[in-house]
Image 1: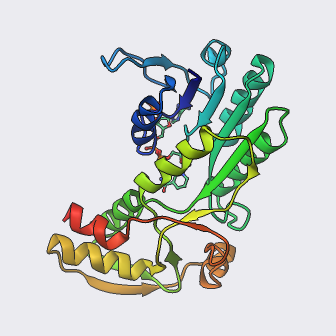
Image 2 (image 1 turned 180 degrees about the vertical axis):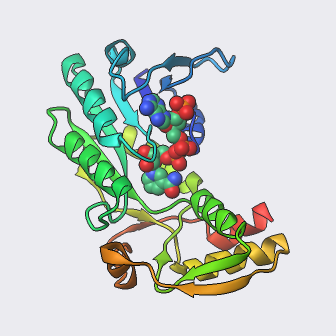
Image 3 (image 1 turned 30 degrees about the vertical axis):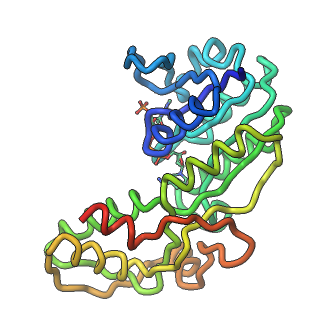
Length: 251
Ligand SMILES: NC(=O)c1ccc[n+]([C@@H]2O[C@H](COP(=O)([O-])OP(=O)(O)OC[C@H]3O[C@@H](n4cnc5c(N)ncnc54)[C@H](OP(=O)(O)O)[C@@H]3O)[C@@H](O)[C@H]2O)c1
């Protein structure tokens, strides 16, 4: 039975990954900033990856580390701390989730995710990195927040390939149980949607009405979005669950 440390095992993706790993016969240990016995046979360790304390103990004895922990900033720092501990512990396989277009968008989140990816790929630990498009959950929360405004902003030319967290979890488990592969093909959803379409679907599903206000995303990021530089249109793995199904389930 292999021992797998899942960082971020309490998050949106992590909560779906953990039972799949258990079902596959793995011994699972979860690292997040909060500990506690949840009576599910899993050891939860309270470690803040940004503080670099307790990571060595969490990693000790793990055959595989599946690194899902992340936040709006500092993922490069937290990942470097994790990589150092994994190198010292002689971990056999480090699987890391990244985000599509991580090397295209000049925004703080993407810059720190790129630093995290580089820390993993340049380490001496055999690794696999999967870049994933925006989750359906993320798209839903984004349009939900936009719809709180009295007028709905409609950024021209911004498109996404939202993907379901169930597809992401299944792919991550497949990778974690396999051999290290380096950077693997991106995982995206089955269809491209403009942000306006996603927002309209949300409004329809929740019975809300808003006036739309066309806006232009400024700067370099705006140029990348309008050129579709954030999309993976060839060579990607494609998720099976659609945005339409997700909306129907959440309406
Ligand atoms: N959501 C998306 O659309 C998307 C798309 C592509 C890639 N990703 C990447 O996928 C990963 C997981 O995403 P998600 O949506 O599942 O995230 P999430 O729901 O926000 O969960 C984040 C997880 O990371 C843990 N965490 C955050 N900061 C930490 C820290 N400093 N030290 C230790 N644990 C920490 C959180 O646990 P506690 O709160 O208990 O500490 C939680 O388990 C992230 O790396 C994200 O960048 C997400």
